[in-house]
Length: 359
Image 1: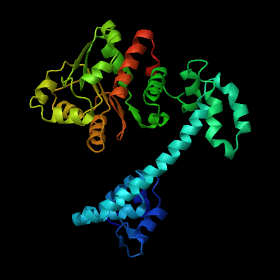
Image 2 (image 1 turned 45 degrees about the vertical axis):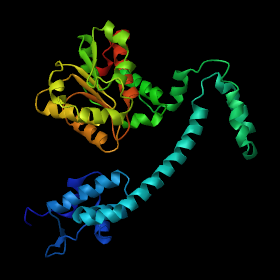
Image 3 (image 1 turned 30 degrees about the horizontal axis):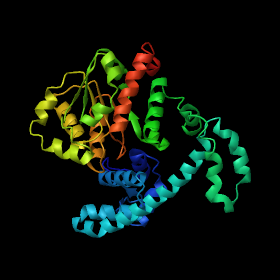
Image 4 (image 1 turned 60 degrees about the vertical axis):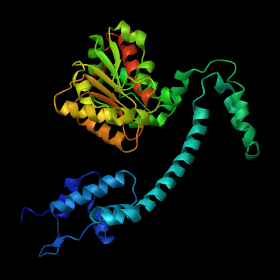
C-alpha cells in the first residue's frame, strides 16, 4: 500500500480524542465525511485531507455542536454563501442551549442553597426538608432564611461542600481557585480557569523582587490590593490611563485608537506582571509584542471580557510561552483578574517560605 494512504485504524489513531472506526463509518453514512478511495481488497484508503476533516468534526463535537450543524458548518466553509442560511439555525441552537443552562443554573442554585450552608445554618436543614411538600414551595426557603440573621456567613464551611476535589492542586492554587469562586459566586468557574505550570512560581518570584504591576484600565488598579503591593515594593500602573472608562466596550475602543500603544508596551519593564481584565485588544497586542521580543513579562493574568476577540486573545496567551493565569472562552472580568493578583500577593506575604507549588 502506498505510504500516502492510511487505513481506518491509522486515521482514528492519528486523530485521537476518542474517535473510533465505527464513528468514521457513521460519518460517511450521513454525508459528514467524504467517501474514501477503495483498495483492490475494498478497504477504505484515507488521505491527510480526511484527517483534517475528522479533526474539525471532533473539535466541533467537543464544543457541543450537533452533527447536523457540523455538516452545515463544513458546507458553509466550502460555500460562503451558505453562511446566511446557517446563522439563524445556529442562533436557534444557541438560545436552546442558554435555556438549558438557565434551568440547570436554577437547579444548581437550589442545591447550593442546601449544600452551601454553614454549620449553624444546617441546624434547621433536616427539619425543613422533612416538612417540605409541593404545596409549600413558596415558603420552603423561608425556613432556611430565618437562620441567616443570627451570624455572619462562614464561607470556608460553605465551600467545603461545593468545591470539587482540589487535592491534586497545590495549596496556593486551591486557595486561588476558591477566591475566584467567591469573587463571582459561580463554582463552575473552576472548570474554565487555566493556570500554566510555572505561573505560581513566576508570580512569587516577580512579586518578591518588587516588580512593576500593570493593569489595563484604572478599574483594575482600583481593585488591586495597594497596601500589600506597596509592602512588596511593587509599583502599580495602568496602560489606559482614562478614569472615565467603566466597561469593557469603552476600554476596547480606547486602546484600539491609542496610536502609541505598541510604544507604551515596549516601555514596560522586563519581568513585570500584566493584569488584563477588560480589553481583548490589550491582550492581543501584548501577545504580539512578546512575539516580536518587545515585551518580556514574568506573568500575564489575562481575563478580558468578550465573545469573539477575548477567547482568541486567551488562546494567543496560552501559546505565548509566558506563564499565565486565564479564564477560557468569554469568562473573565476585572474583578477576577484583580482577585488573582491579590491572592498571589497575600499568599506570598502570609507564607513566604511555602513551596507547595513546586511539587
